[in-house]
Length: 179
Image (cartoon, rainbow, N blue to C red; front, side, top):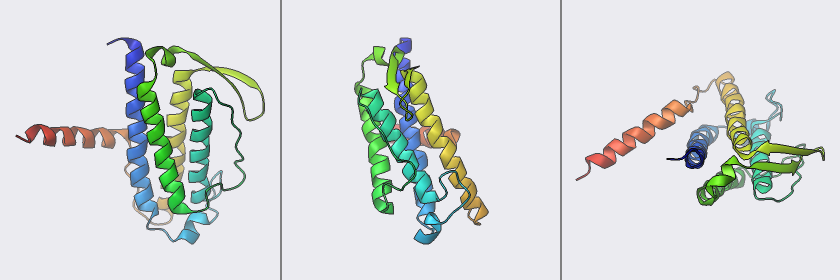
């Protein structure tokens, strides 16, 4: 397997992990009163809802940049006020990214991405670094949300990559056992 193919495979799996972890987080957040999701929680984007909204907007912005499109987002306001629509759109955006990455040419992951920052400055980054940032950004904010849930008295969420891999391995073993 060449190194470029390994990058594609790696990021496709990383997006799958993001979907898996989001499913667990959204299931836990579904137990919260909608008022609590919108309350100030001491997060950078204040509320749980606004933080999830931010995650979606950042993913949409970077996905547009990866496709050679420009984009600008306003992080100061909630763009998706309907919680169910926010969850659905967040997961759909990640699935779209995953499918798109599966179709990318191997050389894409070794290329540079030129884009304008939110401040209008020209930047250049390796595509693999942009994708790494996108994945790490999700984990960062899910961790913040998990901490809020724990502070509110809910059980800590098990969203580590290791748990995802264990579940995938167990599922593969089940499939292999089917005659």
